[in-house]
Image (tube, rainbow, N blue to C red; front, side):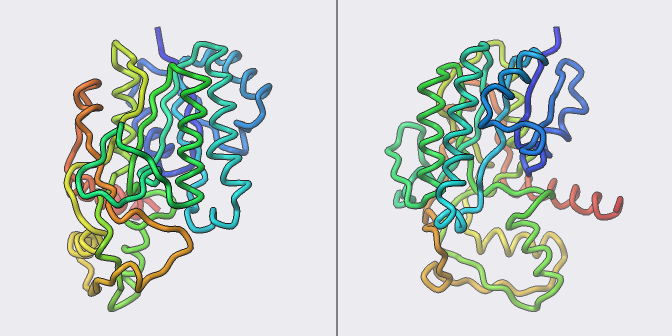
Length: 291
């Protein structure tokens, strides 16, 4: 019997990556929705949709991710990252649906020095981080049959992200300045999509919080240098400190995630971040040729 899967936020980076993987999945029926086709804050619309389509899994990729804008746009950020998640959890609980929800490293304060585990203390320093943590707690309260995957530094060939910004600036400028004192791991959206589908495929659905990013450690500066080199761009990358590049929202200084739990529980493969970058560049170049 085919698994029926609702993918929310289907036009974003992660939703687009899942759509790419879905074409090869003959054992699943996917329903891709975004805010213009399904309002997650509308309980009756959502309940009707999942009942009508016999949804068994929700892959929730919908989120408010404008980190700096969220500092002023608090109400909308909370509505998307908290209210909609709680509503989705309630509907899923009523219909016996399993939920896989994406969260973020921003739930931590970023002051640590060793890979972050799922049971480490949370302490968000931004509106965005607080909204995502509130969404996590709400989902677990109303839908215990849920998996929450925290990720970090997500990028892809789709949408707006650091990877695509660097490629554009690398073609337009001789020099770019990039923060060198924030440490983490870039996560290629296609790899995270595969991790989510691995959870769906598992014979045992084990609820809880998990961490997933690509493997390895680098700074944003290191990532930018690698992007320029691998893309054959001659733009020079200059390192700067965080205080030299002020932003409205506080960024975690350290957001390396420990992936042991998701590996051991679900057998998820975690490629190195440089391998993810190579795949992203090939896909980006392929899409540009097609267009």
